[in-house]
Image (cartoon, rainbow, N blue to C red; front, side):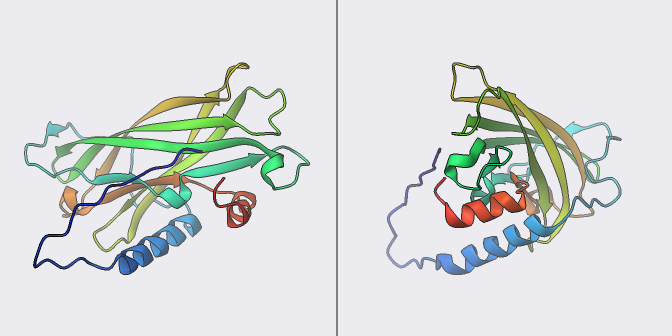
Length: 206
């Protein structure tokens, strides 16, 4: 399955590096809250009624958009098969996300392009397509979940291929409620089934 890497800059003299443990703990708490929360939106969150947009000129005005790595993969099992690697019909991978935004008064028009990959598993049989669900959640500067919504994606995989990818384009309106756009974060992940959650506890590298 795809992985990601990161580089590290050398430390400068006289600077202190923050311990990664508190940050990891905050992300773990956020992931737990998102996984357990439903799709509850305040009035207007990601609504269909969108005000006329005007471009944002100031830098750093868009929320940061990122895939939550612990929820970047999912597994779907063939009927009657064990919840083990041999029983997986399809894997799903949230590969990447890019975000653009426009400001309209106290609301933000957010455009997301999400690359979703479907991959055949050992138990796919003759199936040539997979349907997956992923969520988009908006969090505030204190990582409180301001809204969450699920999106379906259908991926056709040719018979001669092991995997295929689609680019899912979303345009949503997010009320700011007096907040600065740069204070918000947009996070994405798969809405995991109980079977997938249990699977990744035993097979975290799949």
